[in-house]
Each structure stands twice: as structure tokens, then as C-alpha cells.
Length: 104
Image (cartoon, rainbow, N blue to C red):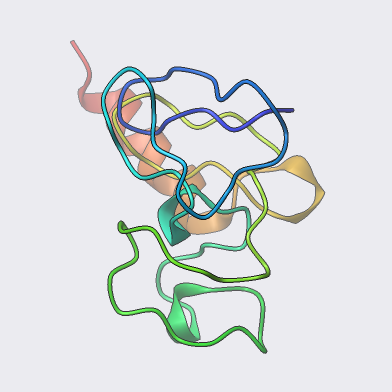
């Protein structure tokens, strides 16, 4: 599955995401922690990859060699719905349930 911009929902045309990739629709930097399958807020360094270097600005582009597109499409407008095995992480799942509860 190709990467989908978490800001606007536009799909990146290929599976490979260069370090300098930006969404063609909204300009969001795509090679960023918040777009990565390993991103998990609340974990040490907010990352499930234990040997990755810490990144201060998780929404900005970085040169992490462990970056990979999520295995589950995120909802446009934010929220990371990725995790190992293709199922949302517990934190992301809870966040999605709250968003659904309060959505009009």
C-alpha cells in the first residue's frame, strides 16, 4: 500500500518515499515520523523501532533509515492508524474511537 498524506488524504504515487518528499496537494512533508509505520506516541522516542535515533520534530521530514509507510491507511486530518500486523495500535485505536464518538 502506498503512503497517504495524513493532512489531506492524497496518496503518494509509489511505495518508496524519498527523504525530501512532499504532498503534491498540500505540501506536507511525508518522510516524517508521524507518517511512519513505526510511530507510536507514548513509547520511548515515540517509535517502535528500538534502534532508531531520536527525532525531535516528529511532524517534520527526517532522514531515518527505518521509515516505512503505514500498513493501514490513516484517516485524513491526522491520527496514526498503523501498527505491526496491519492493526491499529492500542493508543491509535482508542483515539479513533473517541473521534468517532464525538464526530457529528
